[in-house]
Amino acid sequence: MIRTVALIVPCYNEQEVLPVFYTTAVKVIDSLPQYAFTLLFVNDGSKDETLNILKKLSEKDERVKYLSFSRNFGKEAAMYAGFCNADADAVAVMDADLQDPPDLLPEMLRALEEEPFDSVATRRVTREGEPPVRSFFAHRFYHLINRISDADVVDGARDFRLMKREMVDAIVAMSEYNRFSKGIFGWVGFRTKWLPYKNVERAAGASKWSFWGLFKYSIDGIVNFSQAPLSIASYMGLISMLIAFIMVLFVVVRRLIFGDPVAGWASTICIILFIGGLQLMCMGIMGQYMAKTYMEVKNRPHFIISDTNCENPVRIH
Image 1 (cartoon, rainbow, N blue to C red):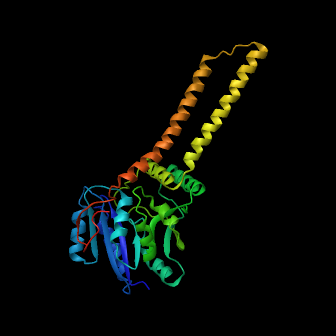
Image 2: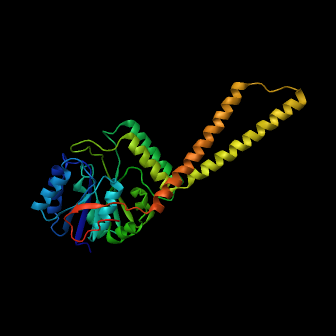
Image 3: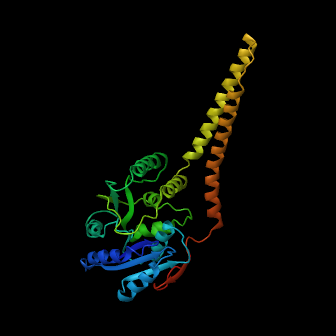
């Protein structure tokens, strides 16, 4: 039975939207008096007034807790810090920009209490207000990662989900440095109910995600949860070798039978450039995996907390 609920809210330069989020979230949690809520904000090295706003909110509302990083470690680290410090029967992750509607919490809690699920996750069924190019590549990414990995990532899935304690403990146990939470949520398993909703635009402020940032994030997800790129590099090398062998046979046979020397400086240069580019691409794929391994073996902490009002916090992990 769920008695306590912790809401993890990663924040990075969210001074414009935090008061609106707090007001909206409090209205929802006040309508659920049967649960004891904690609002756990994780300040990911913000450079604006985010931390000061969180301190003021915590002074007037004891349910507000905050963790403040010593620098910007990224959203993945912020979520992981929240999981490590959330002490509740059920734990939810949601963004501060209100694109994850707090109004869905009652339905999520009801499903977790009354239905045989360990997690209730949300997915967007529309992408209104989002650039068409970004939407196209997002759909292609979800299709690709499900084809080449064992991570169950649903198209349109958000980080916004409510999980029972057992699932949260399993996620915390996956202490890898290179984290891709959407993949981790699917990899740990557990019974998940998907709750669809229409896209909601930010309540205030601007998105911190650029197209290039999302592209790098998708590459991290593929590298973290699939060895397919390495296999593709091997196959491409094998195919190139076979093509080169066939071309050599063609040249030799043509010379012996027809006595026709093969001319074509331009075509030779094109082939050399093609093979060279293919080799560099394959080396780059291997380099991505080596870089991830390098970061893992250094065993650096995922986050460092410099300020908090939590009791006995996990400051470094």
